[in-house]
Image 1 (cartoon, rainbow, N blue to C red):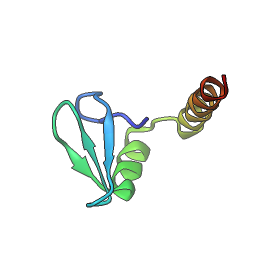
Image 2: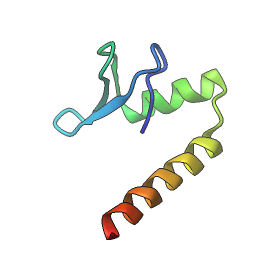
Image 3: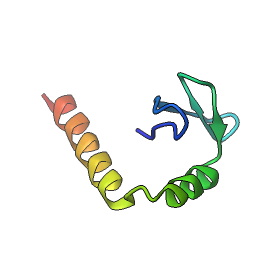
Image 4: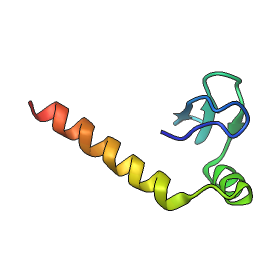
Length: 65
């Protein structure tokens, strides 16, 4: 799950507006804006992708049982 670059809170994707919205501080941004902020802050994209894959696998594994 993406995290807010301002407060570190959890982003929720709003399908109606096609934007991420922070549950903690209310910051909203598009996916492109979010990716640009991540690149500018030097966040490691590969580590985040690996963590996301791990979480998706865990959700899948828990659903199967």
